[in-house]
Length: 68
Image 1 (tube, rainbow, N blue to C red):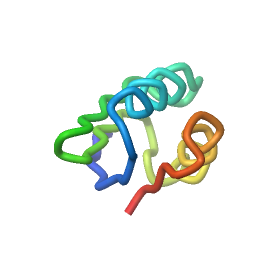
Image 2 (image 1 turned 90 degrees about the vertical axis):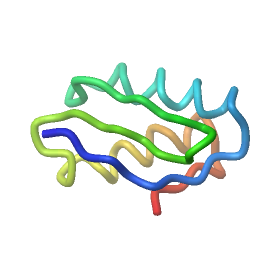
Image 3 (image 1 turned 120 degrees about the vertical axis):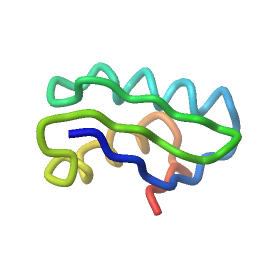
Image 4 (image 1 turned 45 degrees about the vertical axis):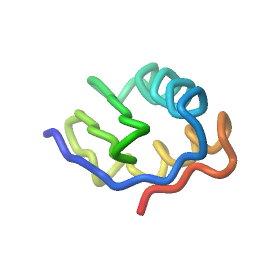
């Protein structure tokens, strides 16, 4: 399943680092973060089920990262 989420991230470099970290997660098929639009496209079997884990992973890289 692919879902798009509104996010909040402070800079393009941080967005890229978060994208890389989330993409490496076992449950995630792919993750694309667009800093300009503040959107994250997440592809996984059950995106809603892993959303908290995705947020936790992103916050390790960028503490100000939020999924709105």
